[in-house]
Amino acid sequence: MKMRMLMIALSCFLLPGLSAAQEAKLKLPEFRSLASKATESVNISLSPWLLHMAGSFIDDKDEDSAATKHLLAGIKSIQIRSYQFASDNAYSAADIESVRSQLTGWSQIMQVHHREKSEDVDMYLLIENNVTKGFALIASEPREFTIINIVGSISLEDLPQLERQLHLPKVGVGQTHLLM
Image (cartoon, rainbow, N blue to C red; front, side, top):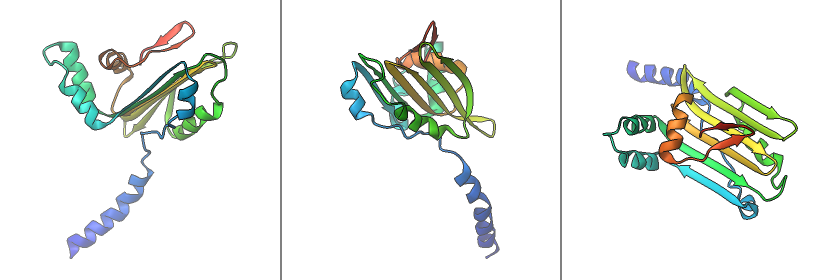
């Protein structure tokens, strides 16, 4: 009976903290209407099972590949939406803002804004108890945008390696290229 009361009391204490923990997986729109207008589109959704399968095909003998396999073990999902259009403003700013609004409570680690070219890049990390729980990137230009959401433990130094091994798209802004 004492154990049961202790469990109930502990649950009451822990449940508010668990519900306060923010979800690292963003709800990305399908953008179906935009895909039909786009000259090029990328829609990638890798679940934990698919990431595990990808990791199983990576050769452990190569040091770089083994490091990538270790990196994948900490990732729970990857979502990428990237669209390029033949004309300016083919997508609505509201499409991007619906994702950006979910990043309240995340740490914005980088913001690049070029007013003349209407280029914006925002990078965010979700950190809880000094552990990275998620990564988000939103890059937009008048003729293209890319949204990347990685759920799991990842450092910025690991992103180029992940991009190379999984052949993820590169995000370019002006003269600067961010490997993703």
